[in-house]
Amino acid sequence: MGAIYRNALPQMDGTDLLTDSGLETTLIFLEGVDLPCFAAYPLLDSVAGRRQLQAYFRRHLAIAFDHGTGYLLEAPTWRASRDWGEQLGHDRDDLARLNAQAIALLTDLRREAQSVSPIVVSGNIGPRGDGYRPDTAMRAEAAQAYHAEQVGWFADSAADMVSAFTLSTVNEGVGVIRAATAAGIPSVVAYTVETDGNLPDGTPLGDAIEKTDDMTAGAAAYFMVNCAHPEHFRGALETDAAWLARIGGIRANASRMSHAELDASEVLDDGNPAELGRDYAILKRLLPNLRVFGGCCGTDHRHVDAIADCCAARHAA
Image 1 (tube, rainbow, N blue to C red):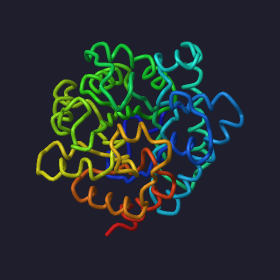
Image 2: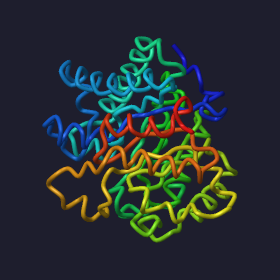
Image 3: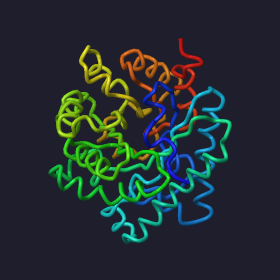
Image 4: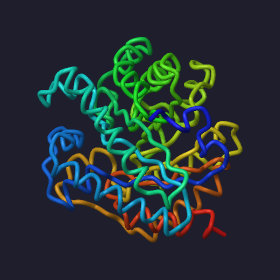
């Protein structure tokens, strides 16, 4: 079964899509799963692991059904690239197999959840290094070469698109987009920001989006912001700049902690789901093309439900 939305992503035509929450923090802190390197993809290698992932996604799909929205299924493959795989004992063949299994799991869920429509399947890509720090500074050409491998696996699968999350430098975002363009699959880049609304390398969010578009001829389907609380970047959005129209999705943290504080924390800060939902409603008023709504660190299905209450087309004022 080939990708069904690759050339016509419904979120690009104004359709609201919910997506999931903080997969890794949910598994670690709420379900007691050990995830070395913060990697969820090794769960695909066991029946029990696959069932745990299926249960997680089904909880979120049920919210989309309740609110009458579509859904964006993100593969649990944020760490399933070469450098991280090497740390976890997986070679190229292992990673190719596990990335393919991830997309197969999502397409099975799509077939199962026929009451939710549309459902888009995305291959999830993470940073080469630590997403909280620009510790793997690369030229755009090197970033393209690195990410082309995982992008290629998704392009050969039933994935409709690829999404790169928690990127901290423009060059890495450019590399992902160029790799996806060469492979013929739509791409989305989600930058993360610090408490000052700037990328971890100090680049203002708007500058990052504009520069990425300049370096890729606007090839990304849209941009997202992830792994930061809305308070950290809302001020950067209070403008009439044209780049705001390029933000199509938000996956915010529940916590107001900085990245450094989150790294050092041994307990989960799950914030306040209802308050986070209201924060998203404000973001929706600031962002004319915001269509994809989900969570990141510290969030779970409760937060996505609250976000849908405030933002889904059926319920939002």
